[in-house]
Image (cartoon, rainbow, N blue to C red; front, side, top):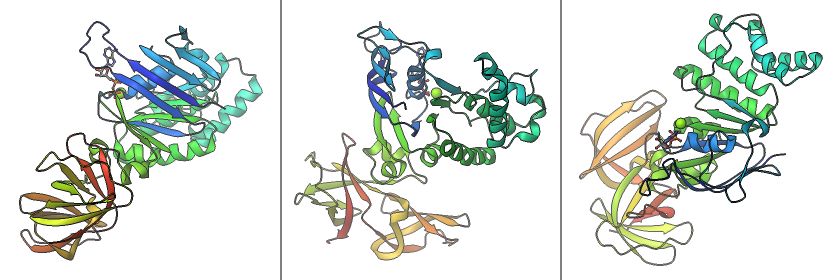
Length: 379
Ligand code: ADP
Ligand code: MG
């Protein structure tokens, strides 16, 4: 069964411009068989290019790509196997169905081209219709279907030939919010039901987090972190990962920090001094003077009406199940998420605390994570 390996894969669109940054730079990635990988990152970070290089639609400038036991691309050995021979399926944002064909014919068409015997073909199409719950539309034409139904047909059509790897490039971005949520559930179930490896491109962090077995987070062509969603959430590799994943966004508080031991440090912030105790040895704190580090606090770790940090309510946004409360402590705005529908008047004075052992310390200049741990006030 296939495992996809990318080694030092680089794509430079404009070879003449030496100063021009690579669309994808020195990417090393191992996608295990049957994984559901999401390529995540802001627009233009190289997600589509990465996907297209694995699929064989784009030729890397350098590097090597292996699918299963086959080297499908190697810049040094001059190997470049065509997409048709890579045993893969595609699902793009614009999933053009054949307008003059019924749902059944749309799904069957690819299998006919592959020369599937009639009986096996019929069986497979029925299976797909059932899996995507579109049996009742079998005889309809695409124009007689809603956007979501059309998308299901497109997925059925792509999955029908049992591709070993299924590539999807923002396949849900044309659907409305409710339908997107529904399709997310379906895709996750579908992945469990098929033997295919899924490689999925999205710029939507929530989509990437909820679907993936592992998230490949990129920025400006460079891999930032490749890890399971909750690892990226709890232990972001750097400030970019910390900021890109999670909503509301993590609080970032500039601090002046100094080392006090292998896994301990102290810092000043909000006019107070804190002791930081890491869960593991801390990275090197650079003595670059004032504001050399950044404390990262997820909104759920800011507990209100606890501890003795002082702030006042900047705004409270109750939405029923949870309430986002923004506090002002000195010049710093701090976001807290409270479970349930609490409400506060603007400017209400409040005590708050940074709780738990999931607080993060980053190097300000490089953005690298220095450690994860808990804080106590020392003064
Ligand atoms: P994403 O899918 O993450 O939005 P892309 O992979 O499409 O990003 O693009 C990555 C970078 O490569 C962008 O800067 C984009 O402008 C550039 N790029 C993509 N395709 C081409 C192309 N065919 N020719 C030149 N530059 C391209
Ligand atoms: Mg793209």
